[in-house]
Image (cartoon, rainbow, N blue to C red; front, side, top):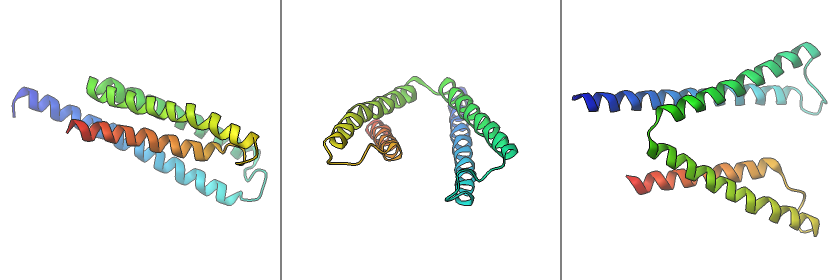
Length: 140
């Protein structure tokens, strides 16, 4: 392999390492949060005050780790990857800008229940991911 190919392979490896780390962090966080919610189903709080502090610290550390991992991702990728991510974010933002007011107005006139943030979150993630996948498909 030439120098350029080695550099490209190194960047791709770093890219997939960061993506894998973020996915693993998300998986562990989701599993722990799901387990805690299952334990506390039907209760105001399933945690003692001490465990609530520990959980708060864990949440803050997880949020910081995701922010750091995202930063590492964006400083290690090329401009094409950044553009693909920007497009995906823009599409997700527009989906929210359209979905929330429409849903809120429909709820105000009694045709729908109040907007559900988790449903909107899922729709926005799907829209953003679809936009990202479409950009990647187009550039192959």
